[in-house]
Image 1 (cartoon, rainbow over the protein chains, first blue to last red):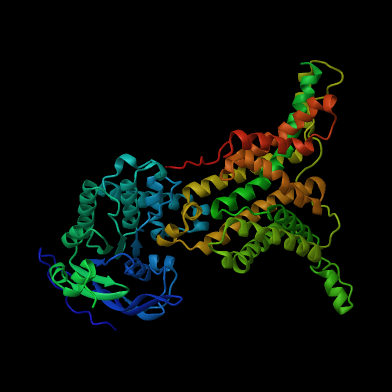
Image 2 (tube, chains in turn purple, yellow):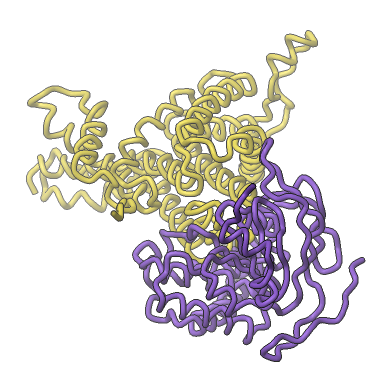
Length: 272
Length: 333
């Protein structure tokens, strides 16, 4: 069992809870390549946890380990106090871990509304037969989920594109719809893989605001990967820094900013 | 009304009834293509296999009788009972669901993330396997299938259309097989059901999601394998319906698997991804080939039905490759 120590209070006065997920000595290999080398860190309830590092550092691999898309060769994922056995990604999703992808993965042929509704799939109870036999109950359930989805739509300010097929949306809005779908699942942990990549300044500001609001409003624990240092330092409570598959730093933005190893990784260091 | 027009209308009505058959087979193709991007070459054989199984169960035939007899020197052929249709159909559905499950287990699971052409080749193998299996299990002779659908010319329809001839002594009203009317009814119920299922149910939404993006589907908690079994099961049930109707009309015989080829032009016309498209495409081809034959026979001779559908498909490929209802492929630059 995991030590559920009391949390901490952030600089802006938010109370962070105990550990919700702990990654213990994770090693991930692809053939002979070690993408992640013996990394450990924890994620606490209600915090915004960033993973940063230069290209190819293994950040996305780390996120894929958390979401079950990759199963590490060594190490344990401890979720809510229990060791998680190797698991298929759809089962991880059912345990309350939602994610977005670096290269947007939306259902292009479906409308924005339908896309977000898929996020509710795990919360829908009536199955195949009951839907066929007892139409009324299924319709009522559909309406309840629709209401939740409408709240998410309002929250992310995408009412105007509700019925638009996703394929027609510009990049920035697609990213927002993907976030909406993940939010509709009411996740315990929300994983965001470069939510602001490829956005202009204004879009980045919007997205940052949404990330903060989600955390603030729903108390969702957020793990995010981001390249834009300004954004990371502003948003996150604690930061893990990775380089060549290793963890080279872990702490508050200020601690990380002054960490020599981190500075070397980003700015380069003269090799003798 | 002049006799020629009446005859043309009758040809068209005839075409509608063949068209429904094409449509039912095409429907099975569309379901699997939509959900997994696989062009399932085995769809026609699945219809054959389902019909064979139904007849076999109904008549209490011993499966694999020839093998059993050859190995054990026995001579069992029949259990000596007849299973009523109402029980035999659910049993056949169970067999088709088991088949779907086996396909996922043995074939699809190992070919995840492969090129579409590889999956297509796998379904060709599946088609040959299933045809052989049907042969070994139930024998190759032509069998009569009777599930209680009324057959023969529909007198009511004939009598009530006789007045159109305006007293012409050569016209007795339109001839239509009652079976075709029943088939039309069944097909419309089936399609309505499928559309409602895919648009408004949880599983239907999951099905469309999987069809669109596997990764994204996984990330919202959809099990790909469950959805594949589900799709193939539905395709199996659609195949059973096609098999029942086609088998009632012309007996359950192995040429049934060849209708699958006629489903190809239907798909090109209707679009590979559209359920209503499969139906409309089937009807257009059915009516088109009968009318074309009717008007062109005096000029270019008969047997145009064999190639008309493919020619029409070719024209469509030139001018509207996505079909009438298919999703338009837009490339953003």
